[in-house]
Amino acid sequence: MLRDFVSFPLHLIVHPFDGFWDMKFEKRGKLKVALTLIFLTFLAIVVQKQFAGFLVNFNDPRQLNNLNELIYLVLPFFLWCIANWSVTTLLEGEGKFSEIVMASSYSLVPIVLIYFPMTLVSRFMAQEETAFYYLLNSIAGIWFVLLLFVGIMTVHQYSASKTIITMILSVIVMVIIVFLGALVFSMIQQIYEFIMNIYRELIFRT
Image (cartoon, rainbow, N blue to C red):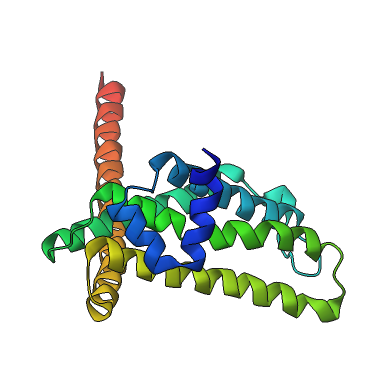
């Protein structure tokens, strides 16, 4: 159990090519670990926004909504997984949907590892030291993107160039899905209002 939750994720972020290979072909990745990492990432983001030092935290705690933060993380995450699975299915990718979820979630480990301690350290920072905070947060983001790139490439057995193309296409598909979802929601809302207006007219006339 400890190996699944600690040892393998730490090995993967240091040796991503070996780690993602083991995840796909040696079945070392676990879906329960993937979901735990998503939750820990959500927790790390919420803790940072709520408790980071005032020199680096420009959020008003009274206006923060943890439910919104969860939606803003979980919705784009699974939207990415669905979009990537859709694109790679057409482009002969070898990855299953569960493998895309695991590769994407294991890539979040640097954010979990860096955000928690940096939130604590930020409370004791002087103004001159805040650059260190922003630097490590940027490293966490870049590390995540690089791991995601290696993970997608390994899961689908793509070349580097094809991985870049499919990741760009996945982002485009995400935008299309959001646009279509907003369009459908708007149409449903208009149909609902139209039906309610007819209903009110009938009530007033009777």
